[in-house]
Amino acid sequence: MANEEFGPLAPLIGTWRGDQGVNVSYDYAKGEVIEETYTEEITFKVVGDVDNGQQKIWVIDYITAAKRTGSDEVFHTELGFWGWDPVRKEVMRCFMVPRMSTILAGGSAEADSKSFSLSAKIGAEDWGVLSNPYLIENAKCTRYESSYTIDGDTFSYEENTVMDMKAMGGKSMDHTDKNTLTRV
Image (tube, rainbow, N blue to C red; front, side, top):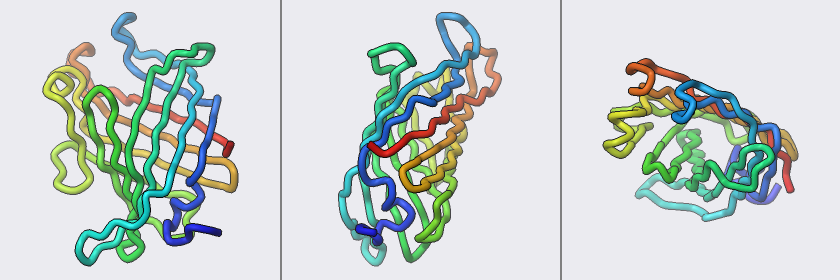
């Protein structure tokens, strides 16, 4: 396969579409947790190798856009980078969402892994979460966990963003997303 240096990320390079998305989140207008379906398109492109002194990370960038099923309006977008450190056998994902929140998540994998998991938590010096002051006061992300499976022309993920919700009396909730996409 071309791009073997990207390890388990190599199969992601390209464009993917999926219409099996399920989002569980808090709906402020309804004042409750809802479940809704969505469609999504993600494009991964090669950036190349990035040197951090002795560390070499093989990097791809991506952008994703999700639309509620039956709607043409994008309700979620994000952009970021995925990285593979073959020496440390680490997969990394750094992304931003327009709510002015950023996550740097990481985990272990082998170069030929078809599945892997990443995590981040608030206050961590390495795999961490940063949000703007409003979000910290109202919908503070305390933990992020995700798992991915890439099998040929199928890419599946499950994500859980644990949030302390002021609108729910400060209770924690699991904001989850999952989808299965196919290569375009």
